Amino acid sequence: MATVTVPSTIPHPSQDCQQLRDAFKGFSLGRAGTDERKIIDILAHRRAENRRDICQMFSLMYKEDLKQRVKLELSGKLEKAMLWWLLDPAERDAQLARYAIQGWNADCGVIIEIACCRSPEKLLDVRRAYQTMYRKSMEEDIAWETKGGIQKLLVALATAYRYCGPEVDMNLAKTEAHQLFESGEGRTEGIDEDVYVRILGTRSFPQLNATLECFKKTYGHDLNKGLKGDRSGEFEEAVRMTIKCINRAAKYFAKAIYICVLLFCI
Image 1: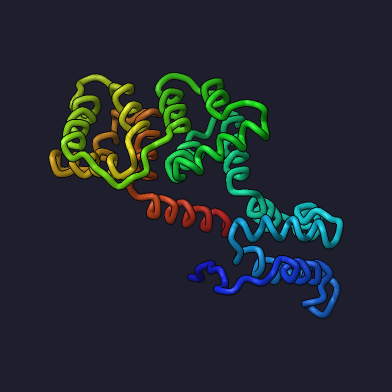
Image 2: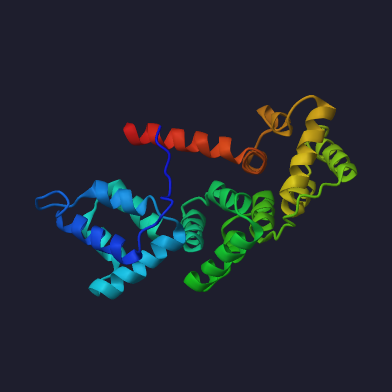
């Protein structure tokens, strides 16, 4: 399987713009029509800041918005993918969050993915972009569209500004592993949502991973395993997704991409 890479030497934005212009006109194909492969080769192999520079340069050189030109030249899933890709990462996350929140049923998975797979500064950038774009705070919309334990968890995750250093308190990890057990699997009725929200919504990712490892060593299985089965409800499913994004983000997204590819091929 191919891996997207960025060239060691990135062309000047004006060169990329010229090649994109040629691809739109079909010059690189030697005939009329859009050279989709060339567009992908350029835009899919540039960093976010490079794509931003390309968009600005394209407007200066041709007095035309690159996103609007992409809309004209491409269609279907490729058009959508390229338009998402051209957005600033924070704006893209903000827009994805908005779509997830405003859907028929709020898609908590998208909010969890954004909140748990971004650094504290990048998550703050997403929240700022959301406010600029929609004149509301992201947490305000989450709170309006959800309720109960899901609401508490999502608001806590979306507003967290976690410590991002590597330090871990093992005594705290052992204590909170025990608290998670007693508040979930160790209870005869339901789950103590507040304990899960407090721990998952405030601790640094290294601290949470240490807690999850202590839980596994102490109780002989992953925390997620104890949240499955007859005891599992909407809140428990959200907690399980949160833990997957924190503990095994690469594996989580690899599976998500695999499923998307399968659905795309149907």
